Structure formats: C-alpha cells, structure tokens
Length: 304
Image (cartoon, rainbow, N blue to C red):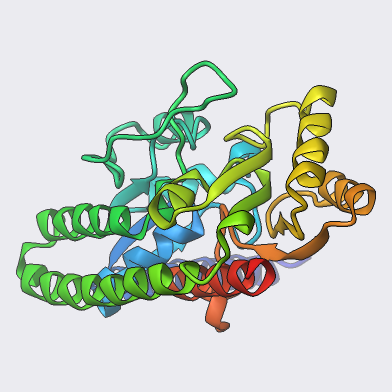
C-alpha cells in the first residue's frame, strides 16, 4: 500500500473518530439541555405518582417494569447505570426493595434517596417475624403521604419549580380523595357474609383495613415465602365453611396454586388484581388510580 493511501486512511479514520465524538457530545448536550429531573423509582406504582407530581419537569423511569414482582426481582446489569444517571431515587421502603441498597452503592452511593412511606406506621406480617408489610399503597389515604414526600423531594432538588410541584400535588390529592370516597361507597355494597378477599399473596391487608374486608393471602406479605401444605388446607376449609364464591389471582404472581384451590372448592376466579404493579402504559389500568378502580370494580362485582 502506498504512503499516500496510508495517509488517506489515517485521515479518514480521524474524521470518523471526530464525527463520532461530536455526535456523542451533541446527544449528551441535548440530554442535559432538556432541563428535566431524572427520577428513578423502584416500582411502577411509585413511578406513576412521580409522573403525576413531576409532570413535564421530570423524566420518570421505573426499575421494575409492568407485571414484574419486586419481592423476587433480580437487578439487570443496566440497572445500576440508570441509578447512576439519575438525580433522585424513590423507594417504597418497609423491606420491599432489599436489592436496591447494593445497587445504590454500585452507582456511587451518594444519590438522593426518598422513602415515600416515611411518616406511615406499617402493618406487620402476621405469618412471619413481625416484618413490616410494604403494601401501604392499598390504603388510598396513605398514598397522600407518598405524594407529599415525592413533591417535597422534587422541590428540594428543583426549587425554581416548587410551585409547579405543589400545584400538581394539590390536584392529585383531590383525585385521591375522590377515589377513596368512591371505593368506600362501592365496597359497602358487598354483603357482610361475603366480605372476604382471598388473593395469591398477602398484599391487600391495608385495603381490607381501610374498606372493611377480611383478607387472606395464600402466601405471606412476600412472594418469596414458601406455601405450606397447612396454609393451603386452612384456606380450602375457610372457603368451604364460609361458602365463599370467589378468589382472586394477581397480575404479578403465578396463579397456578390459587387456580387449583378454586377447582377444588368451586369458588370461581373472580378476576385478576393489580398488586405490586400497575397495568400497561396507555391503558386505564396503567395508572395507580386506574389500577385501584379496576381492583375495586373486580372485587365488588365478584363478591356482591
């Protein structure tokens, strides 16, 4: 190869390298210039509330996707990078995201982390060792605390837009008040002898306490808990003794065992409930409020 050809190849390679660097810098500048707060949430439920409060000032992403069980989640290699690139991390707390602490360390350990349940006294696990029940979002009144904690943290890291977050918070609290009152009215229609909610795992005790239903889960508060033979027998006996008409599977939990219990007791599958995840984006159930409405309608229509 002649010296001139070699020089041309070198020059071409240098031009390609410079072009690549300029392109990458341009994309980085574009990303940084959009001015949005990058918020990472552990679950879709929290992520949707962040979107409602943050509006167009926040770029919100959930680590656990739709239908993913956070109790048994195994982080992907890309997850620490998402955390590292974020401005703020929102977690539920109460032991739900035991995998998140190490991820934050891997991302540098200096992230602003907001526990959205701060200020809530948790229910505890009756089957286990007194562990806190993380599913506080099923008491709609508690979601006001979630929203307040989110709005406060966004305002702290983005003071110029604090009035914007405050206005969105007020609008969202109003929607939660309407949802809470509607849920109370709807669940009051269930006959007293059928006010028993049987689900795949014990995720609905906050809901039961708030809206007057007895709740029984096949598994404990975590889907990591092993299902014991005696628990299956007790549940079957309860369904038969109380002549219960329906049991409910969950969108993020394997339904197989509960389907077997349904077959053995003749209690029908009353429907699928959203427990640790909301529905697909763009659907009514793709928001926290829409998922709760779906759950209430499904429960009431099957039990009343």
